[in-house]
Image (cartoon, rainbow, N blue to C red; front, top):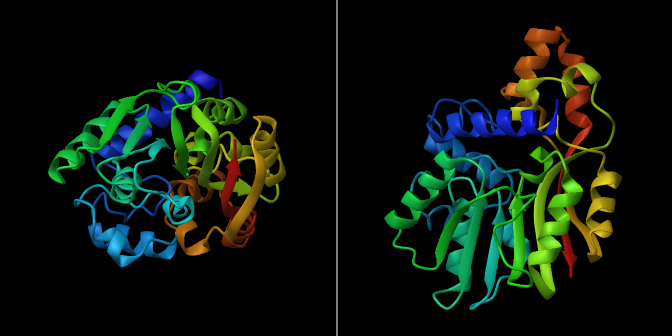
Length: 274
């Protein structure tokens, strides 16, 4: 798919999620119809009960693949930028960490998600969070303006990941940190799946090889790039994912092959410094 077509597909897919019509990276039974299921998913990927209970209902859509906040070591008074902020879950958690003297900026290209996030911030009376409509390849933020950039299972959706990391580097202050969770590949997916629109909304088609992903971070200028955690994408989540639906229904691939595909996908948590 062309870059603009990819963005259109992703934007429309996430708009449906914001309107509670379907799910994305998470299983179809996620919080778009079941808040407790979203919490279960979030616990599996590293969020604690205290974090889950500290934000307004509706902020957590269960769409992540890790917990970047757990690694960010955020401090009071810092400014944080979230790439692909969705309904605001990680932004609100970050806001609790940086306090009233700090600031959190969420950027998302889907107007419906921006509206949802702003509503959640109002519900929780957050005064240190703002949400900006924009693309992560062209961040609406000034040079050298933030202390930490976080992202959760979003950069894999961007057609130009190198550009995303260069933008993250640009907006970070010297000494600033990059803390992200994302999906990468240990081996290439079949071409038929890479070309699937449903798979793109399911967050896998955009994923690239692990080494390619880490190289893009280093090439953007980051130093001390480290993978802090790496886990296989669970097969039981794949079984209900739109990606798996596309694979099974459109390409008639057996369960054994589906398991092999799941084993080629890993969730990583990466950090780097400017």
